[in-house]
Image (cartoon, rainbow, N blue to C red; front, side):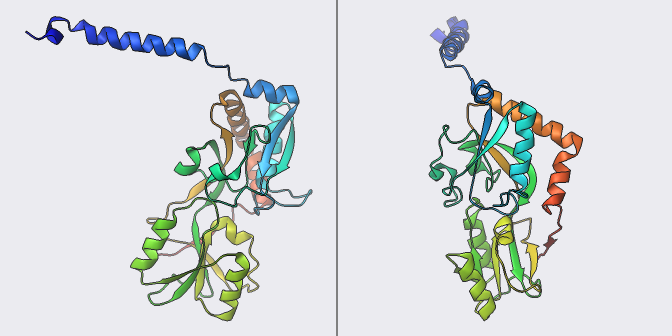
Length: 273
């Protein structure tokens, strides 16, 4: 008879001992004072990019959906909102490369998509704003085989490899552009038949032609994501307070009212191939 069979309780005892050790180790971790610190300073520090319409705008009267919602959240918590403009936000699709610190931000908004990649770095609290890949063309038609389409990836962390593979399968030539200005120039000159970009990146571009039609790319290939507030991992007390405040504001209708001011309910058509 084997030793394991003679002493079947040894494995259970070892597991219990390991759990006990882990519980003791957890007791030595520093306490989560994130909510207490915000209340002590009297301010919820929100980091945002310079502009990300309509979520962040450089207009004191209409500062953007994310900023207005965050201000109401701060009021629910019992503090004021302190907005810190960080030009580094959105310069890269990976939030790890934004160079943000806890001293600057308790919360991040304006371009934070609730994706797996983002959740590897931040805790996220989704808002009603929805993003994903969209196309724009004169007749509202999907990219056709043999055509050339401009692609402006933006920085929200959407799946670029999936988009590239779909365009190759469709026989569409992709022309990667370096700026919104280059994209507009290519459309105006007729060098491209249309353009593909992230939904909110499109709202910041002046196309100069009202006949362009905006539409979602096929959802069975390109899932849509909610935009979100991002909080530091480990800040559980603050995370719970912000979540509860957002739930209360949602129940009161305040979230819907703010969203309607910024056109978040605007319908975007869908196309399929």
